[in-house]
Amino acid sequence: MSYTNSSKKNKVALIDCNSFYVSCERLFNPKISNKPVVVLSNNDGCVISRSIEAKKIGIKMGEPYFKVKELVKKNNVHIFSSNYALYGDISRRVMKTLKSFSDKIEIYSIDEAFVDLSHIEEKKVENYGKQIRNRILKWTGIPTSVGIANTKTLSKVANHIAKKNKTGVIYLNENIDSYLKNFHISDIWGVGKQLSKLYIKNGIDTAYKLKNISNTWVKKSTNVLGAKTVMELRGITCINLETQETKRKSCCVSRSFGKKIQSLEKLQESITTHCLNAAEKIRNDKQITRSITIYIRTSPFDKNRKYYSNSITIDLPVATSNSLELVKMAIKGLKKIYKYGYFYQKAGIILSKLTEASENEFNLLTPIMENKSQTLMKAIDFTNAKYGRNSISIAQAGVNNSWRMRKEHSSKIDTASFDSLPKISI
DNA sequence: TCTGGGGTCCTAGGACCC
DNA sequence: TCTGGGGTCCTAGGACCC
Image (cartoon, rainbow, N blue to C red):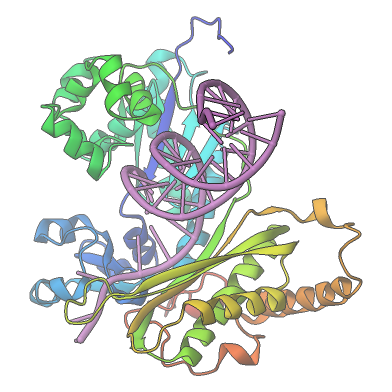
């Protein structure tokens, strides 16, 4: 255990993009800048991003789209299907801008990052936060909120408060308790549905009360993560800044179907497609997998039909990233769990036990054939990168699939394509 | 008619070993 | 005839995150 012998206080900022997906759509569509806007999840299923105006109307996060359709119509809410290629691209620009401030940065999600500000003088911290916010807005057009505090958990709290603040920036340094007294237990980072229930049952309904709970009680009633959260609320760092970018340990691809399907053939097509995409992803990261899981399920919401859900995990004899091999195993697994007579709603695959490709490159057990197929994979990846995903596929993936997801409100913006850039007439 | 998708970490409990 | 106990490793499932 290391002990930092420094009088300097830890300071960590959490920069969070406001209504990120909505903000991305607004970049290319200034007309909707003050209008209620909503972005839907894949398959146009749920609401996953809302503008302030949409929140005010009463559209809730995560709500199924069909339930708010009336509200949407009545209030002229602008609807978008999600466009992850666009959001990923804008995200990279935001993170790049952040890196112009510091290398000590942890990219936490597509729209959030922690930045270490321990080196900034106490009285200059808040102003520094404002500079960050202004530069991101100026360079990318994306509005953010900046919360700064002693620990990551407290900076999450600060960010929450900053979202409602005029300046969008807050340094949580003084009167912390007065803020924590008004901070609901379920809004704390790391406290989800189950923990909230447990805490509230025991009379702990604010961050302040949780902060002052006894160590023994937390350890007994929850787990190490629960205990860490409590310590962090007290200003004691337990969750470190992860500045090293690490490779993923598992990779899943799954989709709900636009239309429920019954046949094994259709399931095979979707599983094959997911497999090809997952394999391409791990090849991109120079990784190989030793285990593949296949799962299928019917809709858990359909009360009129019997529910069926099953999965199977297959360990591979030799780690690989070869699409053809993975597809072969996946289909084999699918056939074992498929049952006739159900209306399937979703299928997916998970590649796990991922390792570096180089570790296995000279494995003597690998047949010479592997080299040949590696060349093939490279050719496929190159073509798909150039002409778009699934330009080259295999016959088993099917064409014109009726099960493909709905995407009826796409803005069709592609930041890599000139055609989708806004047009100016003079 | 229509309810997302992709991750990580922790833990309990089983298998196995000596 | 007697049938322990402690340690490690692995995995499935759950909780959490955005």
